[in-house]
Length: 87
Image (cartoon, rainbow, N blue to C red; front, side, top):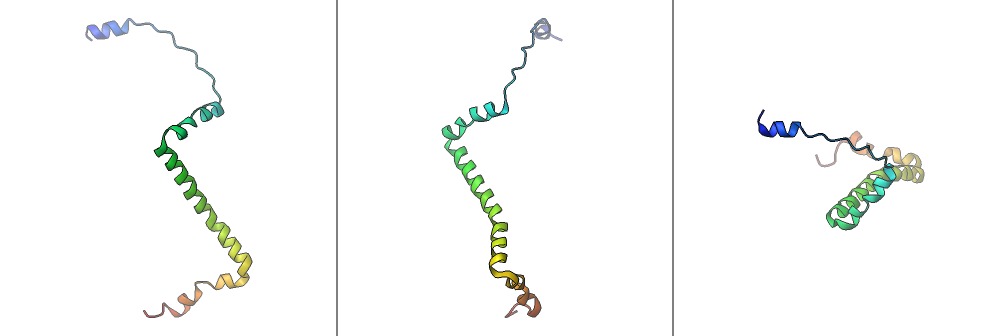
């Protein structure tokens, strides 16, 4: 251990008490990042749109089932029964 280690070992510091901050306050304080960083803002918007489109597919299936009824269960079966046409 050199002179630097000896000097650093003599430093005495008292730990500061932790601040209690709610998660809502932290979240709202970081919303400025969306305003100030256009690249990050575009990323968040793209992710939200991509997530929304992924969640829409089951809705469309349910809507088609309601509109088509039993005819929906026949979709895709003709190619598996007779094979692909032209192959």
